[in-house]
Length: 94
Image (tube, rainbow, N blue to C red):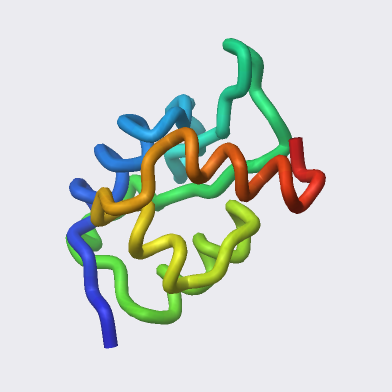
């Protein structure tokens, strides 16, 4: 069961082209393409949870339109921003 630190996941998302916006109870991360927000997004809680478990990572992967394995590659850095963008284009998400 993979577990990732919330701080590391958030930093990786921003590094790979997601823009962070605040909300009342969550941080929202929107994929940006050509400087514009897209409908591809996920969120994390403002709460004190420091680690994101397997179920939450799977849900975040679904929200950003890739498999959990691909999501782990995205946040662990083997997958580049360009590779992720190509997956989104291939799936007609952007």
